[in-house]
Image (tube, rainbow, N blue to C red):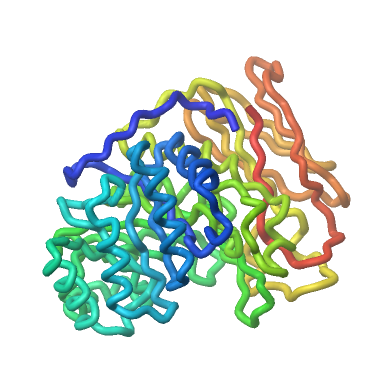
Length: 421
């Protein structure tokens, strides 16, 4: 995919004044990876300003070998990694220590304030003594650790002070929660600001999650969709304008089953039997154009110049009231709007026209990023038509590739993402 922004230089410094962007990478999905798969992911992420991957590792033996391949690819490119231990798996502390130590002195191991950064998904149930011993064992090997976990039970802002009193061994915090909490309203930054304050008291870093979507339908009773219609735009703006975290962590690069992947769908990854029903064909790669724009803004403090005008747009394939042949309607299915969302990235002012069936909308946009939408039409089996209009003349136009239809085999709230460029 051709980028609409100039190639951005990357700098990997240890100074805490620098800003970093990582993408959460599910190492569990690397079972079939060769070095060429790693090379494709790393160079693609690198090209849009992502500094590295937070490696979600889940105690599978094969992950250690695959991560060794990842390091072999990353080191010549200056790409960085840190571990995000998935503590929903059965870990032994000694294995975790060995995994961190194996690459602790690599040039591609990310260091924050000259210490190896380690994060988690969950892990608070183990208590502080587990983490204190984990850090001291590595320190005895000459490996200093900055520990910034995502203790996922800590979401309520009122719990922030108890986090550091209960877990004195932590140095920072990763707020995993980048979606609304089962509500039909947009996400606030209340959790971010509360936990950022206590993370700063401990020296940091504060890691803020930014995610484009959340939908999972693997046949469980608690499968869900969260309100994500405009999340990929406003969450970035929250990071830049309201929170200014030490690190932004994009959730995720390749968690296909939860529909928040911005990486390419790798056909070699075994997604099981149900996830392909709502992942296959539903590309998200154009969301990387949005990420590149906001990554540059976050790191440099001002919006980057835009060379080529583009419109990134996304929509679901079925109205939310469609009755599907298989699967179950997910929790919160009434929250998303039946609409096509379009984010214009423009060098100057224009009108964006959105048409689908008999439904029409237009909005003024530019320069910079502007978002608008058009409701789903009353007619079945329609695709959207997008136009950029300047001085009364259409300068760019194009269609979506996924039809919007009431006919569905499986309940799918995962969006298809396209780009007009």
